[in-house]
Length: 86
Image 1: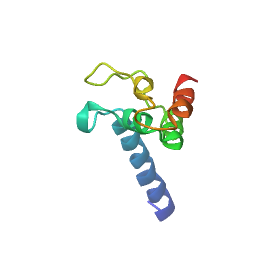
Image 2: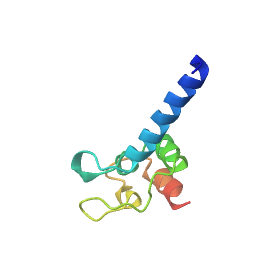
Image 3: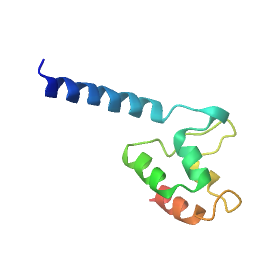
Image 4: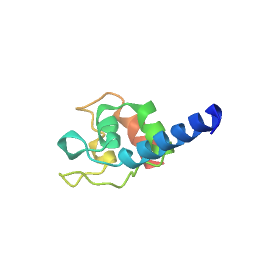
């Protein structure tokens, strides 16, 4: 296999693994999208949504990511909420 094809193949495997893990619960039974939403990381939320993260996945407390967009966690909660609502 030529080097360029091998690199693209390995990169594709990396993306597939990333997409599979994107919806897996992490610490506290939250997915990466839950954590990014809760902390008001708008750009990360946009990226995860573009990569098909599951906006409807519920955590251990039966909350979806948009439920965690609260002013007590982040000043940018309203922007994050708007991205998730779209």
